[in-house]
Image (cartoon, rainbow, N blue to C red; front, side):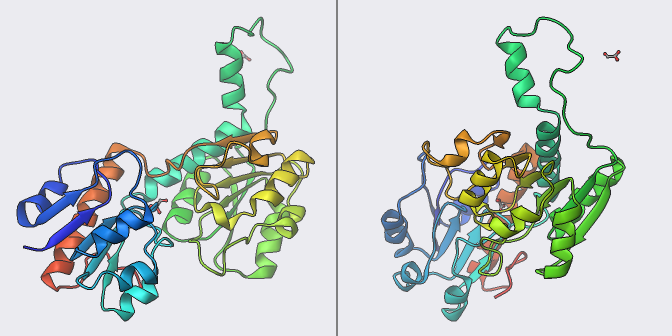
Length: 308
Ligand code: GLV
Ligand code: GLV
């Protein structure tokens, strides 16, 4: 029997497959274990099932001599030092595909909510301020026929592009940090949506310079990772009207502190990192993470292994 530490209770029945086969400890709190608590559990564990809120760095790995597999409950794995893990022969897995469509759906929900001022209008109605049908009330931007710039054309970026086709949008894409293509996209797009992993090369990619290229009527959507956008630069661009709006599922840090200048920015919509939050996506992610752990403990290749 191997020892498994799972850093949170997860949706769906699949965790029982770990509990049936191994000595499995599930962190039963609403908030994640602290770094020290995680390190103490990792020190005893053969396998870790982690969340994107768990930092697994080289120091923690060095204190985990038995560890053979880490299954991250996310498609992104910027919280894990994959290089340090592979140097120690520890396999790292993630949960791709399961959340592609859910995240693309949320991207469109944010895009449309921002374009059509849904949260503002809903609050107005609920607060009893709705007095009559107003010819110039809550005017927003057209989504149909607009130009959508997709930065990052992986699984989720492509799923967003498919949705955009249904809205008759013109889609511009940039695959990598092709500077020329990126600048063209930033200048031309009415909506800009980020679908990149967070890496050293994408951190801060959307900063003062990139924001200055966007149309003043443009809306930025981020369902990838908060740190890809420079939040101070974004707050300035919104405050000065250089950018019409932003809709964020991810921030840096998470949660965004209550005194962050972004909160006072106009036309900002923030939701608490819910891109994959559908029943089916989250249950499927549990199955995939469990499959990764069981394969890693059996010494076979992980079905969903991240590139080393
Ligand atoms: C969520 O952000 C994920 O990476 O799955
Ligand atoms: C709006 O409700 C319309 O009928 O145009």
